[in-house]
Amino acid sequence: MPIGQDNLYLPEKYKVILGNGNVGLCTIWSDPNIVIRQVPQILDACAIIGTLYSKEGVNIILRNLCLNPQINNLLLWGKGNLSKTPQGKSGWDLLVNLWENGVDDVGLVNEINFRLHENMDFSIIRKVVENVKLIDVSDMELPQVLDFISKLEIKQPYMNPVNFPLYQRETDSALPSEEVGWVVHGTKIVDAWIRAIDRIVRYGTVKKTEYGNEMKELAVLTWVSEDEDIENPFIPDWPGELRHVIGIESKDTIHEYIKRVFFESKLPEGTVYTYGQRLRAYPTESGKQVDQIRFLINKIRECEVSRRAVAALWYPLEDQTEKSPACLTQIQILQNEGKIHLFATVRSHDMFKAGLLNAFGLRALQSEIANELKMKLGKLSITSNSAHIYEEDWENAKKLVKCHIWEQPVPLVFNEKADADPRGNAVVSIISNKLSVDLVSPTGEILMALEGSSAKELCLKIAKLDLLSRADHYMDIARQLQRAEIAMKLGLEFRQDKKLDFDKINK
Image (cartoon, rainbow, N blue to C red; front, side, top):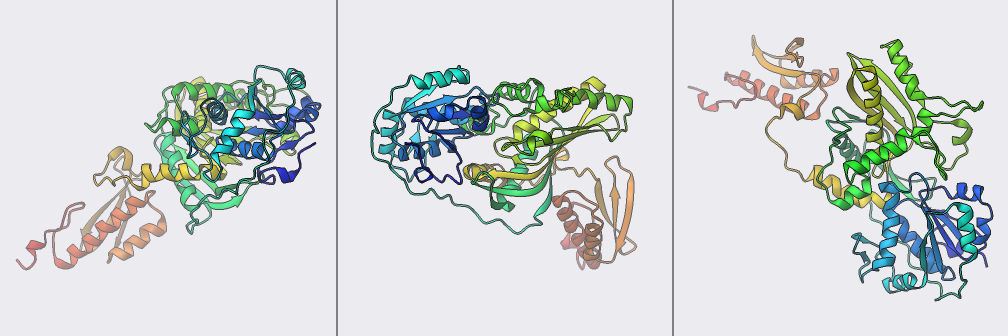
């Protein structure tokens, strides 16, 4: 008997496709609708068809198996292009390890160090693992999978349906904010990324998604990285499990993802699109394919100051009706002073699990273009119109920013490389019994001179003119101006960054 919506865990949130059979089919990181379009008969052979994007999805699979004990075979089909990436393997590996090594009494799958929903009965989960056969059919084409299913033994339900309570996550309320329009900078891609994650954790609005789950979202978040050698990408010394989730286990995994997703033009089976296909073989109605990377290179070569070196990844004929359309929608190249800058626009950005890998892929494209043009690498700027973190990643994201940003000791000594303001420096002095501020360029040229009778007046003037780019720089100049005003009133010598000698008062 076909499964009804009442026998699914939050079906409006975790969407699956229901058929008429008694087998579960998990399409690892492949759209189930594409599978059904290719082999429609598979609906008659399967009870549930759904994909698996993350480890959180394993909890949903287990809950649906508990609700439907007539399913005694769960097939894994990971033949899609993204199935074998670190992201694609994340939930897949957890499932396999759960079936091979089991789960302990507190829900921990030890080999993966992942804890299942604590409000599930793990003795029931062990019963599911014992009675449901997990079968990897990733080496088969879909017609072969259909034939394989037809030969599977049909068994009676091994237990009564079990419905566990809903799982609720704790979430912090978003702090008040400007809501739209954010900019963060970092030297390395990881530096900019973690600042972006921090902003989403603190200020992101909790919203429902089109898939039914929840996310924390910032609107129009631009994150800029300044220096990254893509041949030797910077990978922090974070726990292996965290690096696995965000896809940066090693240089090899990063380079493999870049090659598969950004550089290969051929569209793999079971995949709606790849960025490589859209950039190097963009489809047209006439059937002609456009190599947009070649266009970008030729456009800058023909006119170095061109603003028309733009590549589009959104394909209206497909993406307007697809359930999983392209997330990266446009890239643009601008040349400035012999440097190639790349600007990317992402309509929807899973920042925690996909942000870093996509940024490395874009840097690789930027490097390819700069090398061919024999120009220097400039900055990488990514504007994520919907920069979000899905609910299953909230806890890990918060732990990461707490460890890496919030709880880090504040360095009290100026670091010229890390702390310098690209807009220049502010030199504070006292001239003719007035406070003076000279804005000096990074090369030492005086750009602007301001004067006033009080620290408050000059602080407000500098802030209103938006002369500096860093919050810590504003705070430091405010301190210097306040110290200078005190020195002026008390007749003390003032030297920037030096303590006032109060012992000289009345001497």
